[in-house]
Image (tube, rainbow, N blue to C red; front, side, top):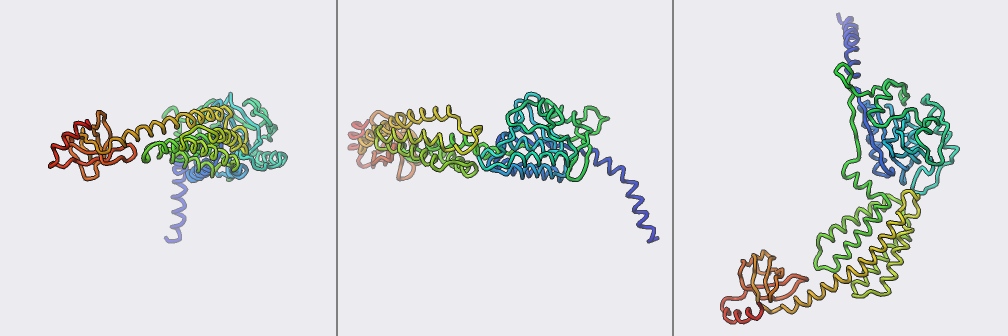
Length: 442
């Protein structure tokens, strides 16, 4: 009986095998991985992680591309990761007007199947990396892409565009093998095709079921999370520039105000994101130094209450620094000259006039408040420790240094902290004298 047990177990497994296979077929799934914009550190990590999860679940991958290339990332290594995937990877450029340039085009060659949407742009292949690093030889890349196609049993690529080409040329040049306007149409178009993976050939099951009799296919869309999306945006040279200038402008505004308020914290947040972007994206140290030095000179001129030579020199330094700070990257992701011109004009108006007027107004207000020291007023709301105080015909913000003060209490101004009056309640024994002083103060 013991000798027969293994045979009986084998018979049970064989009997259940069709049911197991059917269950696996019913669990067919597709993961749509969206790759949008330059492929920086954040997007590269997200792409690798999404491919690994798809391999664990055995899902077919649709790589939705709209990218001009990598940003300081190894484009060939990422393409090799796509080629080495153990599940089918369909690289689809879409929807229109998406583009696949540089590393994005290389992904089309590396995928199990390439697809395009009408109206998209494909190419050029170089530069692969938008950071301006040294590029591989074109002949080597053509040989590599051809070997990938032969390995996968795909038609040999006939086109390696040196300029943007329409979707129709991508089909004719064997860059892509399918055309679809949307993801749903693509899934219907490629259903049933045989494609190659690192583990061998696989028949695609991607069509979305429309009736109960059809086998269900689960389609899941993945994208960058909220934090990664912010970090990805902060890695763009344009957004680094915008965040850095606006952040410093907010901090400069705080120099004209007492204390440290919302503008200061917002400025710190924007500068922190810009610093992260500078860690990810390549830049010119000379350009950054001129940009920051120019803003510092204009801020110094504001602090010394004049609009003079420092402002003019700072504005010139800021303009030159803005032009060359990201001059090392490809023109497709460099800061727009129109944006730079707008920011230079805005900097002149903001530092040259706006902050100067603000600090002059603050000086006048502080001078007026200093003249209130010693006068008696009345609280128009509870001070705990701050609240409204009415002194000499005007409502001011007061602060109590001796605990809460009820509304309607007569108080004397003892000092000024920035734009806030420091007050104390008037002692009761001196009520008559205070009444005289209060009449003068009010």
